[in-house]
Structure formats: C-alpha cells, structure tokens
Image (cartoon, rainbow, N blue to C red; front, side, top):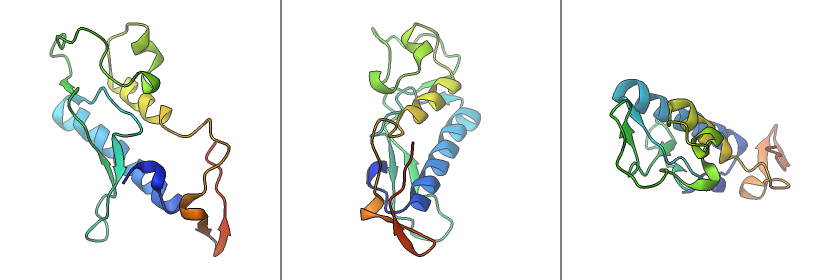
Length: 131
C-alpha cells in the first residue's frame, strides 16, 4: 500500500528506514541509481515474518548503473515534483540526489497527518505531526 496509508508513526518510520536501506543497497551493492524516487515508488508491505522489511522501493524503470554514461533519455529522468534541485539545474544524478528526492516525498505541506485515524503512542490516540 502507499506510504501515506501508514497505520502508525512506528510503521511509517520503519517503512522509511527500510526504503532508505533498499536505496543504499541498490547503490552500494548494485552500483545502481534509482533516479525516480516519488511518493508512489516507496510502499508499505505486509511482512510475512518478524524482522522482514515492511518498506519497499519499487519502479526501477528509470534506474541506471552509476558511471555507465548517459542514459540516452531525451529529458531528465524522474518525477519533477520530487527531483533534487541540482538535477533540475542539470547536474549529473548521484546517490545523494536519490536520497534528497526521498525526503521530498514527506508530506511537508500538509497541515497534519492522522495515521489510520490516529496513532497509538503511549496508549493514547493522538494525531501525529510530521512536519
């Protein structure tokens, strides 16, 4: 399910942690830049066993190997609203730009977020503010 449909602040943070780890693994282990981090490309999954990741990075259509030269695309790769500023200015895409795009996905412009109608924090129903 989409990241914005998280059921608790804990679930949101765990999914974000897992997604950043996946991004890091793509880069460090696979030498791959995702290049299209957007709110629709990191999701929450239902872990089958305890300890399995719940955050998943999807949609590798625009990914490319780092240092493999130009991609051949006629325009910048990625979803404009989530692109790193330097990439929009024409700088070559790096891992740091993927990470910046990840943080652009956070709901900074929203008044507040109510995960699942509230979150269980300390036993009380509360509204979280992720700003």
